[in-house]
Image 1 (cartoon, rainbow, N blue to C red):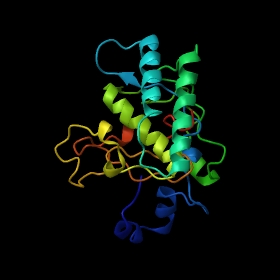
Image 2: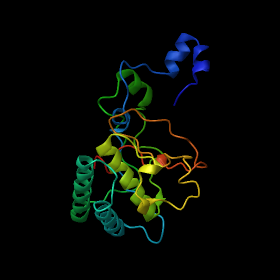
Image 3: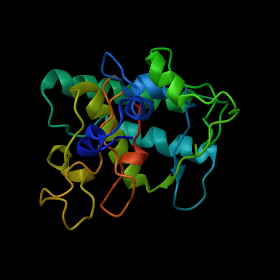
Length: 215
């Protein structure tokens, strides 16, 4: 959350400090979301159950290992190796993550103390509002591509960075408008602003934090 600069300037100092905890360093996604439970995505078409998700996720990852990335040779090789490793791990796992819930464990240990005190609620026993959405398989492919791309390149891909095979059927996909609609939040960097509504091609809430990049 943020306070608009011109409003913040007019706030009393005590109110300002209560609203905006201070930190002597940049706060990363990892600092705040490290304690959240790992959840799997949902499947929006047809049935959604663990075995089906496992098969579909592994197949998507195998396809990503073969897709052209447009990255430099070293980064492209890292992308491919990660995709192969994730596909193998998903195929072999006997434990598929659930889609909601998880015991409340606060924030990561690296979270600055003032921010931690502001964020953590000791009365909570479960994470509230923590449930994944169902997605089309085509979007899951795009999310996985964006996640791996962000991991190896250190930046979230824009529309121009996506392979043609992953281009969505959006009329404005190649116009430059909302070019970052499939943005990923990089685990070791501060979060970008996340639009809180879905009316402008917002997928940000679907590709938060680790995605597959840290799995």
